[in-house]
Image (cartoon, one colour):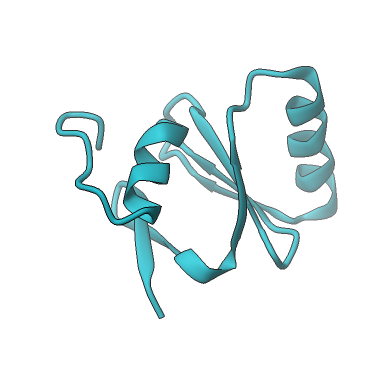
Length: 86
């Protein structure tokens, strides 16, 4: 099992990630609110601004303060962008 850092010491299983998206669009804001209402949200932002939304195969929605592109690079095994973490 491979884990990917999503910032601030938090990890997510790479095999469980279905989608990695930006939180800026209205449909994503609705998806986040619906997940929050249903108790499926995992907030890993540590109080920072949400910069990416990770959707898992178990329908959990994970909020991260790390940009989606950085997490995507980590999923693809490329080196992480320096200074974007924490």
